[in-house]
Image 1 (tube, rainbow, N blue to C red):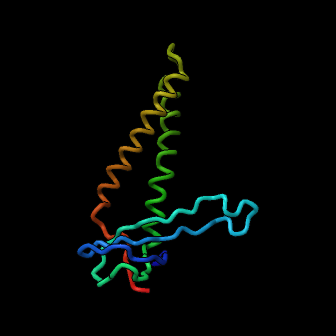
Image 2 (image 1 turned 120 degrees about the vertical axis):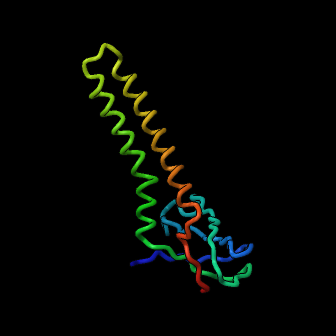
Image 3 (image 1 turned 180 degrees about the horizontal axis):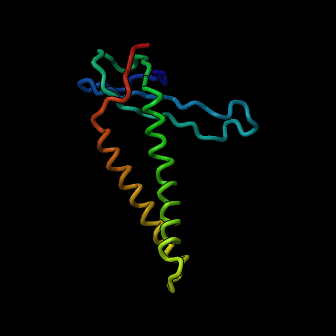
Length: 137
């Protein structure tokens, strides 16, 4: 199992719920617009049994499979649902006297909304799981 690791700094530790400041990597490096992009830090909360104090450097680690699955769910699933809505509308109302474009847009909005609702429910299911582990740097 491969893991993804990122270095961060502990900001707060409340009973094992550790808030970590992670600086995002800049994707541009030395492009001509260097400095024009906003590179904001992220705050990530993870559970850890370690005795971590603010200022401690840690590594956040997670399985690359978990990251890939969650990324697919959040980014690819809505696109698939949107396409499915458009195709279904065109199949069901191909020989209808109704305005196909309007019905297609309606189906796209409905299927996209359903995908967002399903992602929200999926997110609630993952809420208690410890997908990120911490270790001292």
